[in-house]
Image 1: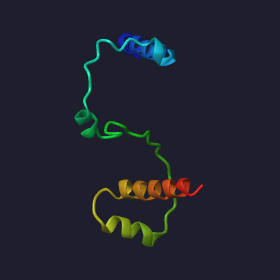
Image 2 (image 1 turned 90 degrees about the vertical axis):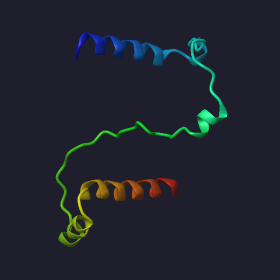
Image 3 (image 1 turned 120 degrees about the vertical axis):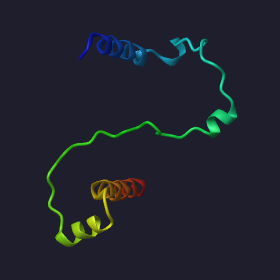
Image 4 (image 1 turned 180 degrees about the vertical axis):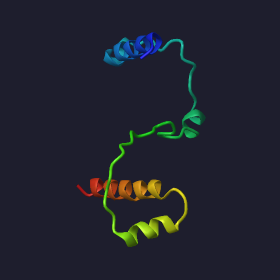
Amino acid sequence: MSKDSETLRKELAALAAKPESEINFSDLPPTTEQDWHDAVRGQFYRPLKQQLTVRIDVDVLEWLKSEGKGYQGRLNTILRTAMLAKARHR
């Protein structure tokens, strides 16, 4: 890790440890309703990925691949949708 990134990591950790009441926001420009209306939640969020080996039925894999490039991403989307649906029903 470079010295700059280590310094930044320490600064961010110190800031995260502070209560919001101790953070000086005076240099931030004011926001408007329109700013928030156009905001996209999670726009820059990229979940961590982990490589693994998994056994999938041949017909399921053929179906995923038949839809074209990106079958691994589609599989991840299907699994995430199922995970979130189950979490909502708890």
